[in-house]
Image (cartoon, rainbow, N blue to C red):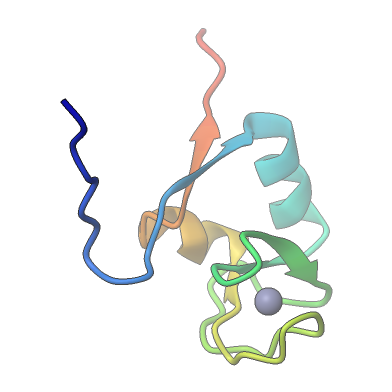
Length: 79
Ligand SMILES: [Zn+2]
């Protein structure tokens, strides 16, 4: 039986590697939930509502903010 996944709107949590996440924080990359990837440079980790150079939407958020908002889910290493 097929079951449709029902999300709340356009928001979708994307799995990223921890390395990519850490790299994005360190190099101030911004996450675009529309493009579903890090598309913007010089974006503070806690930024919100920045423009995306790829799709043009003002939905880019900083890497830490993307994590807080549940847009991305870094694959955390186990210690
Ligand atoms: Zn975009």
